Amino acid sequence: ETNKRIHADGKPISPNLFGVFFEDLSYAADGGLYAELIQNRSFEYAPDDRKDWQPFTAWEYLTKGYGYGTVSVETREPVHPNNPHYIVLKVEDAGQEGVGLINYGFDGIVIRTGEKYNFSIFTRLISGQSMPLSIQLRSKKGDVYGEVTVTADTKEWNKYSAVIEATHNDDSAVLAITAKDKGTLAIDMVSLIPDKTFHGRVNGMRSDLGQAIADLKPAFMRFPGGCLVHGDGLENMYRWKNTIGPVEQRKEQRNIWNYHQSVGLGYFEYFQFCEDIGAKPLPVVPAAVSCQNSGGTWKIGGTGQRGLPMDEMPDYITEVLDLIEYANGPVTSTWGAKRAAAGHPASFHLEFLGIGNEDKQTPEFRERFKLIYDVVKSKHPEITIIGTVGPSPAGEDYELGWKFANENALPMVDEHYYEKPEWFLANTGRYDNYDRKKTKVYLGEYASWGNTLFNALAEAVYMTSLERNGDVVNMASYAPLLARMGHTSWNPNLIYFTGTEVTLTPNYYVQQLFSNNKGDIYYPDIVSFKGTNVAASCVKDSKTGDLILKLVNGGEATVQAQADLSGFRSLNRDATLTFLSGRNEAKENVVPVKTVLRLEKRFTYNMTPHSLSVIRIKSK
Ligand code: AHR
Image (cartoon, rainbow, N blue to C red; front, top):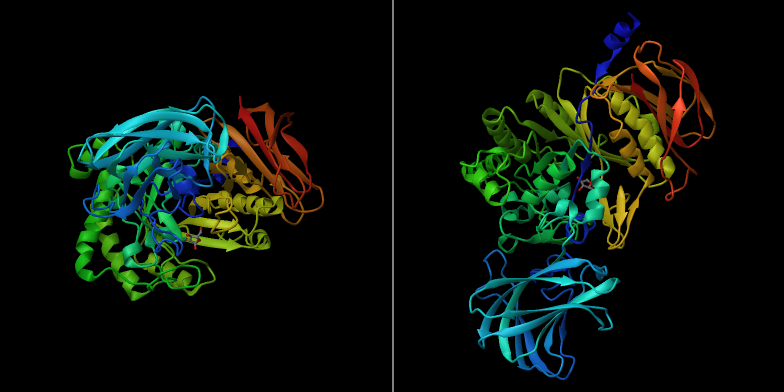
């Protein structure tokens, strides 16, 4: 009886509630998740990326040992028209130690003794019959920590590959390519990728970062942004077709965050990574307009929001439809065949598609959005389309965006907000009165301003309200996900890293505890307490039958909570408690600790100050 009552009281929670937001900012892709160790491998860096960058950035010309020659950047007859720049190394006299190039990687190249590194290079002989190249891992001082020789011997572009085993540990090694004979050689696409990548993928992801994301067990992953999606000018929009196929044929471009996108981590790799971590892919495509903030102080080279010319819209809409075919179409379809050729004949099971990011609700945007939306909706009713309602609920585009969404019966819209922790604590009622029959919410970007435990707990308090409203908030992702220390374009982030280390923030552990302990039914009124900055939720995971209580105390005083589980029949008395606690201002060394609890059906739990407790009770 009681059980029935409780079940009737339970509210459904979206199965996709907690996911991740990946944007290539703060070196999240190149120099981050993407395992490539060579920076500017294609010599495509340009002053457009950053004022002080050019095709030779991160490289050095090496003439040690009294050899001489020249090095130049050329563009005639490149590997591929999408990849126009390459280096010509002209060796007049190789001297004792050869003449060549050094690459410094991203803040140095990290190598580990006994580990193997997959090296590859494209070359074209301009003069001479062959040119042996010595490829060395070196310390910055010049000690050799691994070496192979490849011999360039074709007058057409050709790819050469070799495996180098490191003989030492070095956190800031370099890669040296030296020619020991006279001759002239064109060089492009110099790559060094650890043999050990996440899930062992060729052209894969860094293992430790991939694992840190996988450990969140995200229900979905949004990519590739953020502002990166719409870019700061039409020429800067992220066009997915530029990012697939052989890496040397991809079209690189300026990154809106003041660096460069090699797109070595492109749409195929995004889809594959999603599959590897068990997350549903959520790509976001531009709504055929560029960012309204272009030309603002935080972006370079912007031209202001502009829409694609209307006569280009039919092709653009086809581009969006082709993406769906690339992800899900049969191998006999044009784009499904390309996916298969890349090594994945099976569908990527795309269910969601975002159109636009924080775009201003201008006539230009709306007209183009609607054109794309109407076609995708009619041709692919199986895809949930997600619209956008501006950068903040306080902005004018929010109300306009919601009105537009409801008028056009959008299935879901993407809300964003970055606020003080106090805002999150004070706004837990935000979704309680949203209209359940209308457009659903994807809270695509949110974070409180900071990485202290207090920030994380404010987010945890708020996340209990997302669970409570898991019928209307269908998806939520903290943003941004990754940032390379020393190269952050945005703070705070969920995970910080260097070439050697991965730092998980208190905010990360909160996300992890919620995501790893998700439920599909929410039960109100199971836990009662009195206090401020305190919250609790009770959810059930129907797959395991487990009941999960989350108790958050972001305040300074211990709060006594009463839990009444008497309405649930078949619960075990044994439970696990995962406890996250520390000083309010702590940013590091805040790690969850697991213990075992024995519970009565009714029990009192002391929520200690600055803590999140997750109690997981198994069903019998
Ligand atoms: O997450 C950082 C940025 O914040 C995103 O690129 C953008 O969508 C938002 O303004």
